[in-house]
Image (tube, rainbow, N blue to C red; front, side, top):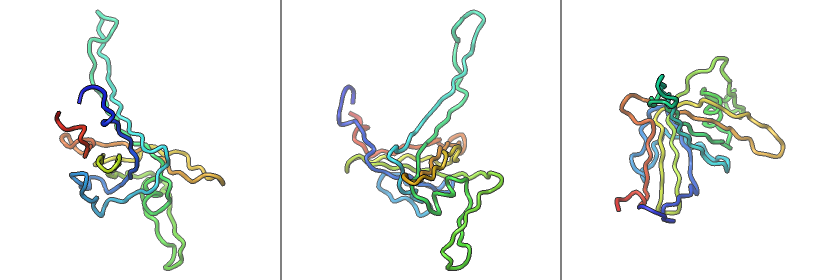
Length: 191
């Protein structure tokens, strides 16, 4: 719809972030359940999710002109940034770069996570879902990516621990999309 329409303003009122092994099949619509391989990362900070797409254009300069004659697309970065607020068997390894948490002895109730000496590739699929009221649902899926940055882990007496990450999309191949949006939203209906 062209022009101003308050019906097309979206607020990501409530949502969730899920991870799965890289290239795990995601739902193909907005009502199907996420498969059992998808793990919900739980509560996130009120900052929500920040999605960033940056394309790098390199100028082609010429002797005859002070301004570029054209641009060549040389890079595309697609990142998702968020802060997890729960500490568990899914969030801590996601933040730290993979690995597992294991009980130190049977029925001990004591668990151990070891941070590897050398970083390892920990590719994952990432799914984001949010709703705006009961009629609008969005799903955003990155089939393959990696945590490329983490924030400082602050341990203080008056604030919740936050596991802040930046997740960067990786290409699967030359034909698979870098990411996919699924929308149950009448704003996209041909008018």
